[in-house]
Image (cartoon, rainbow, N blue to C red; front, side, top):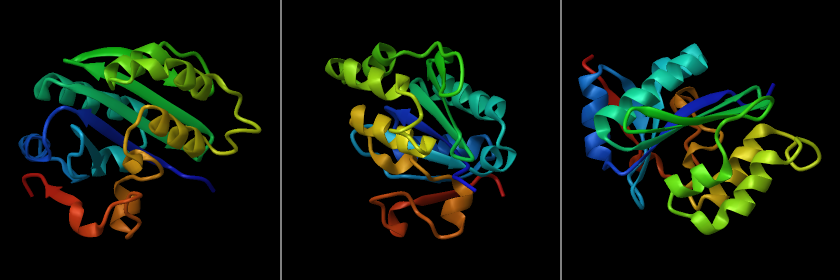
Amino acid sequence: MGNWYNNITTAGPEQADVAAWCVRHDRQAYLTPTRDGITVVFDREVDRAADPGELGDLALLASLELGCRVLASAVYDDDVLLLALYDGGKQIGEYNSAGESTLGATMLCRAFGVRGRAPLVWVVLNSPRLPLFLFESFRHRALMRALKQPRWAVASGYTYIRRGERPHDLDESELLHVDGGR
């Protein structure tokens, strides 16, 4: 059985602002520290539901209320990578490693301020699964590297963290657990 995970990456707001937003919405989540404007949110309910629609709704709401770009990421059994980019409460595009996509390399590079890397991002998004990407979490890792983003969102979700499997390059003490209104 492969990786199953969901998370959202916010670009702009600080961890404290994202945590306050989670509390306002009664969300239980782990949050990474903010580095270079990036904070990753691992939401309990989204992780448990494993529903791309619920993940997208959360990302859309975060982008609207936090006034930032949000990248929703999901990997299902390491067979499919789903991405959706939101900005200011609007969906910019979606990517599906197993199907049709409206999210291109240029859009992702513009969103994360790495415009010169669009050809590399295009290769990552459009390469066939085999032989390069035996697992879709490998594609996700390559994409984060191409976008010059921390690998915290790769192969990590609320359930994994709860079991003690923290994101790559983070100490447990760096993760903030938000318990919503509970």
